[in-house]
Length: 120
Image 1 (tube, rainbow, N blue to C red):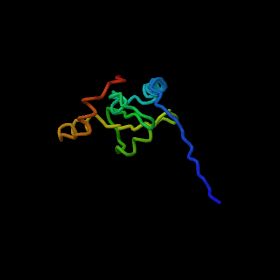
Image 2: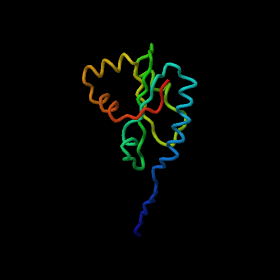
Image 3: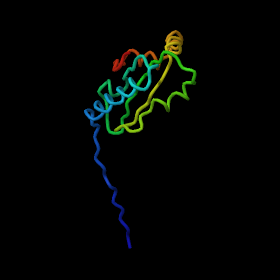
């Protein structure tokens, strides 16, 4: 007896409007709960309008200062709920300046293509 396996196909799409609405709520929370955040830049595929199902959004958070290491900061800025994945990069102003001076490609690209979505 032959067993035929049928693959389930799930059709998904990237709901840009839902992401934009969720991002507004997230930024309001940042404004209320994180006074150390001075600016937030949105960059990556979302800004380049290259989102596909499974895409995430990328945020560069610029902080006035922090006693925590970069890795320790990340969980504090991740939302508990968001319709797509989110990568946050919470750098202090001092760290950011140092990386710019060192010619860090990642930071340079994030700053060049980034769209400011929050400023205090």
